[in-house]
Image (cartoon, rainbow, N blue to C red; front, side, top):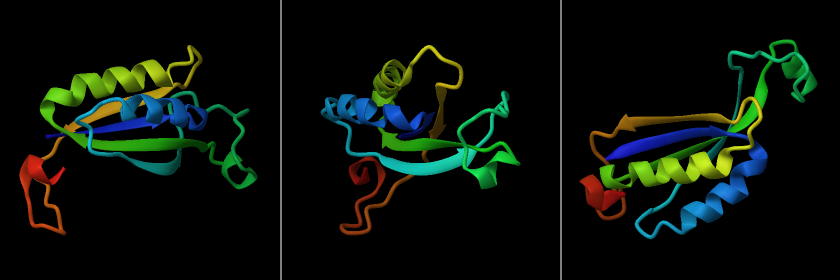
Length: 113
């Protein structure tokens, strides 16, 4: 199993979500609001006043746990739908997941995703 984390621009979430819904074997995703800075550390970003001093920019983080076989397809969908051609479109990271446990049923491994 793999975890795909993608940091995206807020306005791209709907496009990405709709495209991911078309992947039949995808069991779900989580979305988290995040703030941070990258290499650009733009001073003219539209961050809240409290964040401007530090240079934080608001983004969304998508978290998806999927089978190894689905990773390339998930990445492809996110890459295509998150792309604007402008600076700061985001990043995608993939990590290994050792195990998963469904609390409700006690299933573990890929059956729990």
